[in-house]
Length: 516
Ligand code: NAP
Ligand code: MG
Image (cartoon, rainbow, N blue to C red):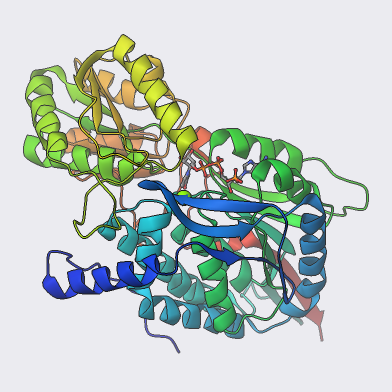
């Protein structure tokens, strides 16, 4: 029996011992940059002529790794191998599958500083953001292992004379897993382990900007004893292999986390039944957000400002849960804005692989850099620029914290997901208006409210329509099975990663009745 699940604890990098271990890991990883990684289909490592070059966002001349890039033929091959391996894997005892997750968690725990350092280089996470990302990956493994043990075996139904009845959960088949780059270990591990522990086989297509950390995860599953063919690793461009993977007649489900645009495409394509396909595909599609923090006139403004700065600029604003709108009551608006600007001015920006332990690194790639810059220009014309164009180091995709005030709730920078360190500040005259603005986008992922008014907090519980609502704390930083995570409306298909309903999404229920 496994002991009860408990989330991993973070460490304090101002303490010398943790700082020293992180610096050692950064040193070790920097000597391994630029290595090659292959596809893995069945038990075979496959090299390709085309390569994905993973670049460090904070030093664009630094190559993190060279990764093989799959073609449509590889996609076909990977789904077929996964389809055939399903016959074996679906019959392996749930407890056995769960133990592989527990073992993988133990390996990650032993390598936590090293895995953190890889994310400092590959996606420019700060030390604590990277470390928290490994903790979350471990949490998913530990939690889903226990969840599978809980869900395995027969579940009782209403007794009926002369019969034995039960319901059991069985796996679906081949699950195509498509994660984003922004939580390249946590989300990748979460979706992959959920599919595997429930008895499905997986074709994993990692994000092209973060394939190296995904390769590390695949290595860890192998070391943990996962049989060949259960997890097939298929880095490659989404625009080349995305459709073939989703469309394949032997694909049974798709678990995707990423942008609304790609999510909608998958939703539509997965609905089509192809010749030879004998099921309706299931999809889990977790998409973008336009999250906000609401601050009323009774709030603790210091706490609110700290929460906004952390949620808006942590990991350069590249979290689906990031605070991209601050909606404040007019009577505290000016003071709160001053505090937020002061806080943002104090943030450090640089290479997370340097000894400084910076707060912000670079944004993920040149496309993100250009897109965010474009939104900043749009923002400058849509509101009053109160913080922008701060000094940044050379050599990386650095964008300093940017704050645009007096933004109309329907302005583009108040409606569209920017996915960068850009905060739109919006004024409201009363609580009804604050809530209307908060709910006034097509998304519904996370939201927070700072208030000391009990009745307003209670109203927010009912009327603030987001999947993850936080009262008197920031809107980022959900923990596995503490705050199960996932949004409403265009933020996704209403699943809750790291929650107690999640694994059922990867299974179907079979009713068995025997008359004696
Ligand atoms: P993205 O551009 O949608 O990419 C996500 C994944 O989809 C990548 O692996 C990408 O591969 C792949 N892809 C691209 N085109 C595809 C296609 N035609 N068919 C199938 N797959 C395809 O998103 P991202 O930039 O990586 O991530 C940022 C987005 O994720 C934001 O919108 C953020 O809000 C959202 N997000 C949501 C959650 C949540 O829980 N709701 C959590 C984290 C992030 P390539 O890299 O090869 O293009
Ligand atoms: Mg990169």
